[in-house]
Length: 204
Image (cartoon, rainbow, N blue to C red; front, side, top):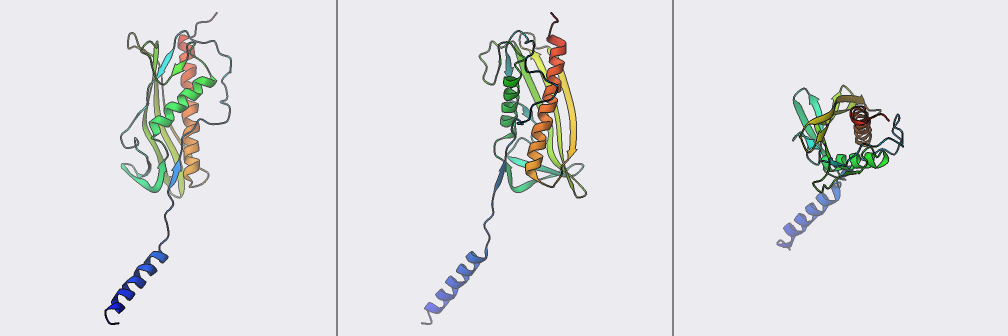
């Protein structure tokens, strides 16, 4: 009996500790092409001759992970625990770009994610910031992005667009953050597309 008593006490403590712990729920967020129609874009556009390779967006290394960054000071970020991107951001952003050009076929021979080597143009994207910014009790969505359209035969940059956007969220909510980043990205992609049309689209 004396030998079994410590074993019983140990089992009791283990069961008590297991019963008192709460399971942690991991939450995953996605960057997706917005369902709403992009304003200011006509569905029937005069297309530009040639096809375009959508290169995988380049991301600043601090944001090129599954972790979601929170900036609390000018040079200090931390990452949310138990809250992550479902896919790596560059993969999701490439899919958004492809979806946009399916809705608005600017390139006559199409825009592709996997190239054959014969595409006339390349669309390059670089994201230098994609983060939640905490200011007092508010969360902001911040996105700094640059788009380039390059002539693949010469390497010349034909059109460029750079944007630095920050928008306050209605609530401190990462679902709202993911939605805001998706919408900001497409809005700036739309502006870039208009730059492409202004440069390359010849009037009839």
